[in-house]
Length: 506
Image (cartoon, rainbow, N blue to C red; front, side, top):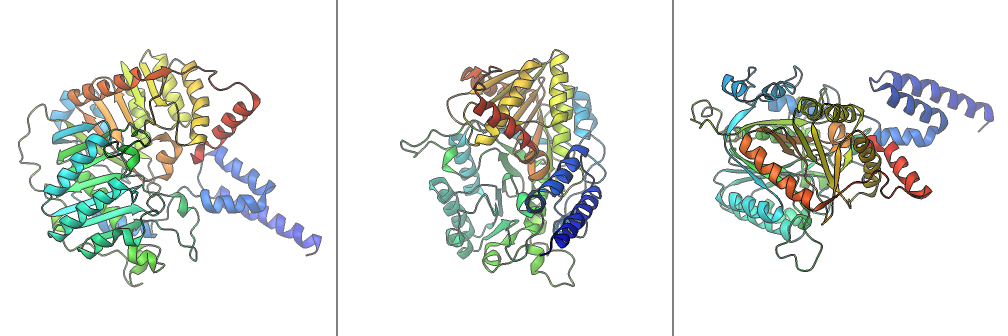
């Protein structure tokens, strides 16, 4: 190709790429970084942007939005005003409003019949399996990782048995996180009448910009629409030690169960994801998304025939008597299909609202600038800020980046602790003595803006105290972080600072 033609193509690339990027509303530093990359490394940056650049899943007419719109017609309406009993009881009650944005209103806090915390898979898995065994009508599960190992097979067989008994079984597994479970693994459930769907499967022949980057990181179990489990535990032997022989020790993790009306919020989230996901059989046929299976004349995915069974507490929740000390729970979700970053906003506001203590456990401590500023502000106000991260992470990049962010937080007064026994995968926050946050979201950009996540904000002094006891046990098994830890030498510093640059992707 003549040199003049190459020059013309390059100039057109720079002009077109720059205009394209300027039309996207992003942080100025991010836009500038992509523009510089487009100019300096045209081919590499183009492929990189195609894979990782987009921050929204699709527009208002896209597949995900069609699923959300279809689900919205059947989700119980959101109550706009917080209940006076809730406002009067908690100093931090106003935090419940931050997620109730106009474009994506979250359900307000509702009283649960019970909330139970689990410190690891050894306690959570038996409780989930027992609840599955007691299911009478519906079983809905959604997981980022589902391994075809001992615990994964045990879950599958339990669900197949319930499907044989006539219980409606629906499972969503992330197409990337659950890729080790092939179609034959799920066949016992399908043969028994259950259905398994994949979330956001990649399609080689029909690629979409950035779509591979958007994963469901949620861990959800719903029993008969009124008992829910969520938290940091995936279906994997890494979170269990029973029957584990002499293998690696089970990960420390935090999960919880919710009995009662707050489960409605989790059920609503599952419905959106169910309508967006596609069956395992369709994936094997090369289909990309559930909406692709619709005739072009159809605008919304089909609603399940038994939708009336999905929300059994819809009429009862306002009349069911609750004791004064019953915990209040708000379910908050976020994802790249939403304009607002509700979990990020909740974390930021919780950190800035803390008055006495702020105790955080996260496996990946890679905060963005607003969260860094909020943590610095809490330290400056005299709040007891403690953060537990694993001494040895399963992600080398996240571990390297966490060193630099931990050093910054430590310099501003936060007490950083390194959990030593094994991997700590818990995602929790304790604010003063009344608010606890437990869920699937890490303290990183991927959880804030790229993944589909879910957290439970629990307003209750007893749950707060129990979670604080877990935190103190973890702290007793941790060592203090030193600002210059593992930072000696050119290679270590280069690795840490390079990983920090990649923080938006971690």
